[in-house]
Amino acid sequence: MKTLGSVKIIVRVGLLATAAAFAVAACHVGGGYTIGGTVTGVRGTGLVLQDNSGDNLSVSGNGSFAFSSGIDQGGAYSVTVLTQPSNPAQTCVVHNGSGTIGTADINNVVVSCSQAGRFAYVPNETSNTISAFSIDASTGALTPIASSPFASTGTTPVAAVVDPNGAYLYVANNGSADVSVYAIDDSTGALTTAGEAIGAGNGPFALLVEPSDQFLYVANKTDNTVSVFAIESGGGLTQITGSPFAVGDEPTSLKTDPGGNFLYVTDYAAGAVAAFSIEPGGGSLAALNGSPFGAGAGALAITIDPTGTYAYVANETAHTLSMYSINTGTGTLAALSGSPLSTDTSPESLAVDPAGRFLYAANVTAANEVTSYSITPSSGALTPASSIGSGTFPLNIVIDPAGQFAYVANENSNDISVYAVNATTGALTQVARSPFAAGVNPRAVAID
Image (tube, rainbow, N blue to C red; front, side):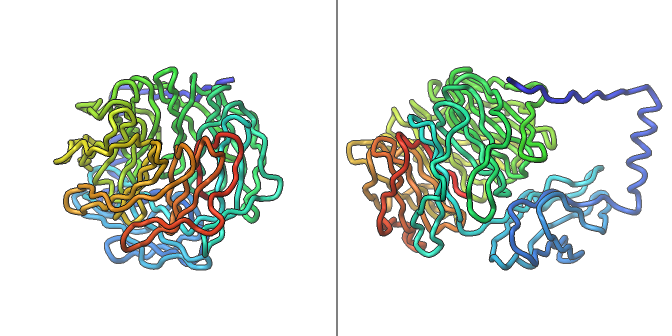
C-alpha cells in the first residue's frame, strides 16, 4: 500500500502575514542569523565543529545542530571540523559549509562522518534473500553474519542502501514494486524487518538516501518516475506530496551532490541524465535548466566525485564514459573535453574513491573485469590505469567509506569479489579467499 505524505497548508492573510514576516526577520536584527544543519554517521566521541575559526560546538550524536553565535546579514560563515571523532576513529567532512548570510537562518550545512566499513549487504535477485557479511577491518574479507541470508519481505530485490547513520537498510524489490526496510543491529549487523514493505512505482530499480538522512529516493524504471519518501523515526517511510516525479525514460541510477542540493538520474532508454534541485527540508524535485543533459546510449549508472565538482556516467550500450563538470551553484552539467571516453567494454557501474583520485568501472564484457582510472584534479579527465579480472557479469561496484577496499557483485557467478585498493596507484589486488559466495544472482553491495 502506498502511504500518503502530509500536506502543508500555508495561510496568508493580507497585511497580517506581511507584518508577521517582518517581525520574524526583525528579531534577528543585531542578534544575527543562526548557522546550523545536520550531522550524520557519528559513532565516535569528541567531534568539535567551528564557525569562522571560533564558536566551538561539541557534537555528541547525529541530528540537527546550530552554533550559539549569530551572524548579521551580509556576514560570512565558514563551518569546519576542529576535532575528528575517536573511539572509533572517524573522518567527518563538511558540505554546504560556507557562504554569505542573507535574510534567513542557515540550516542546510551537512556534516557527514564515516569510518572503515563494518558490514556488507547483498540483495540476491532470484533467491529473494539478503546476504549479510561482517567485514574484516584489516583485510576486507567477508564472513557471513549469523542467520544470513535473510528472507526478503518483497520479491526480486535488486538494489540496497544503508542510511548515513547506519541504522537501517532499504531494499528495492523490482518484482513486488515496493521497498523493504530493515533495522541493523549495531553490534552484529543482523537484520530485523522494520514493518511492511512500502509501495513504490512499477519496476523500482535503484535507490538512495540523501546526505542529511531525511529522504529516500527510488528510481522506478518501468514507470519513468522517482518516488520520494520522508524517513520517519524508526526508519519508516512516508511518501511526500507530489511524489512520484516524472524523470525521463527508464531511470536506472540516482546520485546527489555531496551536499544533497541536486539529484541526478540516468535515463537508460533516452541516453541522458535528468537533473533536479532538491527542496531544502521538503525533498521535492524541480528540473534544472537545460535538463536532461546528453549522455551515451544505455546510460546506466552515475557517480560524483567527493568534492561535487565532476560527474561520470557509464553508457553500457555505447561502450563509453561520459564526463561532466558540475556548476556547484546551479547544479547544471557541462561535458568535459574528451567526453565521451571510449572503453571498448560495457560499463555497468561506477565508483569514485573517497579521496577523489580514482574512478572504478565494472565492465560486463567477455573479460569480466574492473578497470581503474586516475582522475586529473584540475580538469576531471580520466586516464586508464589498470584492469583486473572479476567474477562473471560484474554488475555493481562500491568502495568502502575508508577507501581501503572495493566490493563487486558478480551476478552470474553468484559471488562477491573483494579487492584491496592501492592508495598511490589506484590498482586493485584481490584479497585472500575472494570471491565470497552470495545468493542466486546478487545485484548490488551496500556497505555500513
